[in-house]
Image 1 (cartoon, helix red, strand yellow):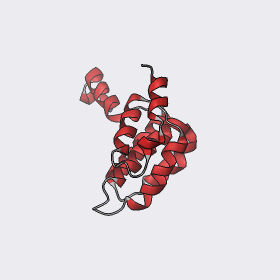
Image 2 (cartoon, rainbow, N blue to C red; image 1 turned 90 degrees about the vertical axis):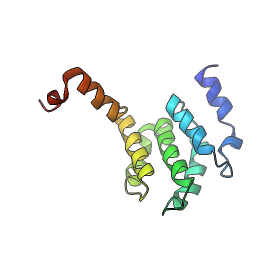
Image 3 (tube, one colour; image 1 turned 120 degrees about the horizontal axis):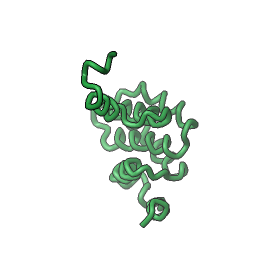
Image 4 (cartoon, one colour; image 1 turned 60 degrees about the vertical axis):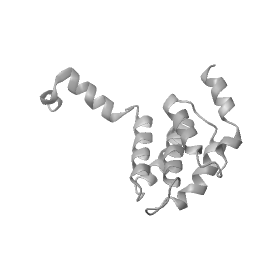
Length: 130
């Protein structure tokens, strides 16, 4: 099965209904595989969960918002930047991390930690500052 086939199969609104507490896991799987989803599936989840993703007892909303932000970056590219930058102010660490990850993807940096570790392996720790 190709990514395109998976994308169209997963792009069924029943998987992304706000009542599906596991929707964030589907978003995460698509994000990890680099499968862009239609904005029309991502936006309702984000808009419903964003105001609920505050405080200590907000599960699963902080995960929905986090994965939806990364999915928006994949789907919209630079048009997602303002929302990603706004999410950097969230009180939820998971959301801030996802926003930073989305911005990194837009900048072509990929996963910053993987880059740093590959550089350490290539030039050693002392070579990072030189």
